[in-house]
Structure formats: structure tokens, C-alpha cells
Length: 112
Length: 115
Image (cartoon, rainbow over all chains, first blue to last red; front, side, top):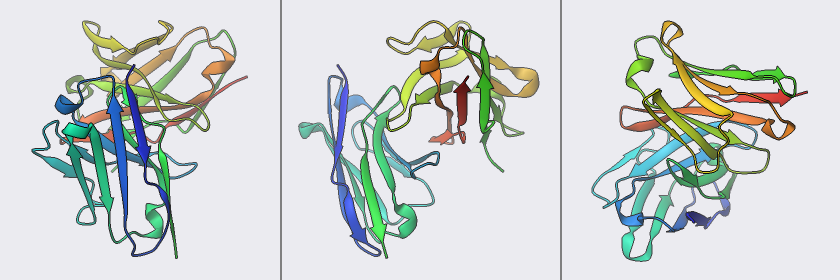
């Protein structure tokens, strides 16, 4: 069974930092491109980042470019999202996902 | 201009069929994209339903009932999710997605009410 499990969410003040993790199992983690997608409570889905299976390339949405960094450690089957210079508008549930499988999400709340 | 447009809401009766549309922005040809569909129930993460490109190139998610199917309407430049034999458990938000410019792009979602 494919599983993706996020962790690391929480409450942080504006301008602060947070690192999210996502551990994958049940699939070929190291060859799978993975994305981070966020959802403001009650709103739609927003793709924010993607990383290739080997970590050779990353892509970001304009809304987070320069502030967020995606990386992975395939030896640990773990995906990361380093979030810096956080804004109130970054408050959302953050999901890690590959096309057919999504984690349960972790809530990030940025307070002023 | 929004890349993918979905109606914000749709209502249908139990046992009926519902057709959810995902219209691509002018200049982006639906014929060249795989359309992904996700279902999200309240308080849960999105669940993958299916991918549709053509009748010979489509993929159903594991365990997804066959009453969920995809198609395209080239004249409307839209992807379509058809749900037949609606059940109360189908009440959810539905999102379409495409890979566009090496990124994922989501539609705004359609809230399906079964009543």
C-alpha cells in the first residue's frame, strides 16, 4: 500500500521558518517525482513545488519562489519543504503528493 | 486568465448522472493534455479518481468504481468527469488538474451536492 505521511506543521509567526517532511512507502520513492500542494481551509488546491525523483531539478510556483526550497533524501524515503520568510497567506494544509497518491496533510498556521 | 475553469457547484439527484466540466483557457488545446480528476470529501485529502486523454489512453484509479469515467469535449475545449448512478457518498468537491509548463495546474473545484 502506498503511503505518504507529512509532519512538521504548526504555528509560526510571520517572517519565521518551518520545515515539513513527508515519508513515503509502498512505491518506488527514488524514481518518483513528488509535489507539494497546499490548500487554504475552505479553498481550492494550489500546487507549489515539484522535485524530480533523483532531485536533479525542482520547480516552484511564483507565490513561493525564493522563499521555499524542496529537497529529498532518497536513502530515507523522505521529501522536505523548507519554508522561510513565512507570510499569513501561507497558512494552509500542506500535502505531499505524486499523481495518484496524496498524504493526509499537515497544517501550517502563520500568525502576525 | 485562469488556466482551468470549473463550475463552482452542481446538484443532482441520487441515481442520476452528473457531468462535471473542466474548461481549458483559450489557446490551450484540451486534445494535448491528460486530464486528472480528484475527489475530496470534507476533512479528507484529495483522492485520485482517474486520468483521461482519449478512449485508448486512460487510467482508472485503484478501487475507483467504473461509474466514474472521463471524456473530452473538443468543441468546448473541456475535460469531463461523468458520474453515473449518483450515490449520496459521491457528495464532495471535485478537482481537475493538468500538467502545464512543467507544473501542476488545478481547476477551482466543483462542489457536487447529491439531493
